[in-house]
Image 1 (cartoon, rainbow, N blue to C red):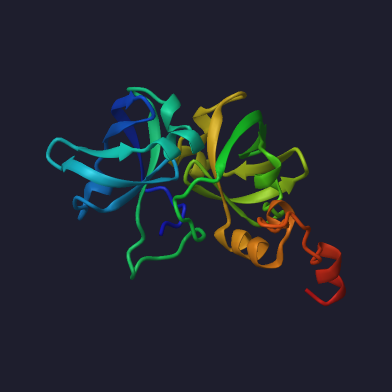
Image 2: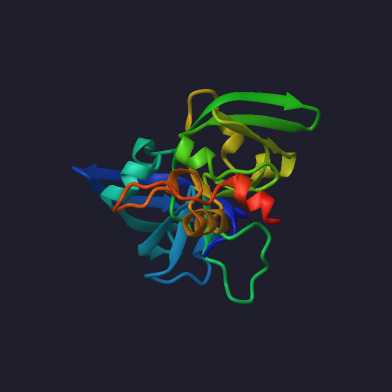
Length: 222
């Protein structure tokens, strides 16, 4: 499990894609501390298993499977690209962000980057199955960064980036048209599954719609 608090920005040393899978090697320093083969590191929010590492030379490597390439932006990266890195949270660690699994739900596209005072607004469009699980003032994970949603409608959502987040992550190096990894709040996904809201409302066997709606929940005090 991760929290979406980025520990450092790493640099891709090599990425090799053959067919539908491949491997990636990343230059880093802080995330290598106390890390062993088999540990998990989130790369742009994608949970990857460390398969090789060398603390003295400052790198780690991981395999990338087909599903990861389909769901994320890792396949579009190349040597020299910066990526957000976070080690899995230790049991005695501080919970600074929100519950992040490292399992990406899909990607979004940046459509606008606009400064307002000391903050920067970033607007991202995404598919309805992702937007349906986003709520204003709730949490969203963008390229591994835990952020608060400042606005959402049926076409896009917006976040406001403070200077510290801009400095410590890669998000503000991106611009209009760039693709970012998105992970919905895992609690929202479980709630939607259990009560049958939005894209999870249909019974997979019968195709029938759930009788539980937002209006039903509001009427009964939820």
